[in-house]
Image (tube, rainbow, N blue to C red; front, side, top):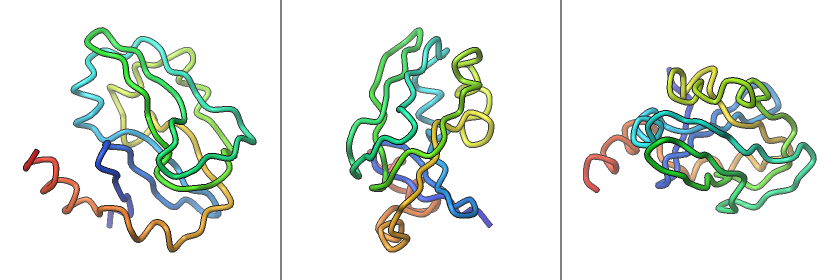
Length: 124
């Protein structure tokens, strides 16, 4: 069972032990084209839901990505520094962006589940 929840911008968040892992939906990564650079947030940074957490540059576009939940950045995917293309090859796996701690689990319930995300995305 997929435990990811999605924002309308296409960020996903999934519980992982006492942390919440954040990344981009596969369709958003595909729309970007080949990713060439990822700016990751600083560990220890407190971020609000909806706040820009970092940026991604790609051949086709550049974009900010946003934090889906309020919390504290407890880890970043350092592999993206040397291999930003992981966002293209495994956006919902090895291409995750960062992890949050200190999250109110109830805030997660307001995000879209996978079926709702796919329906919303198909309608835009």
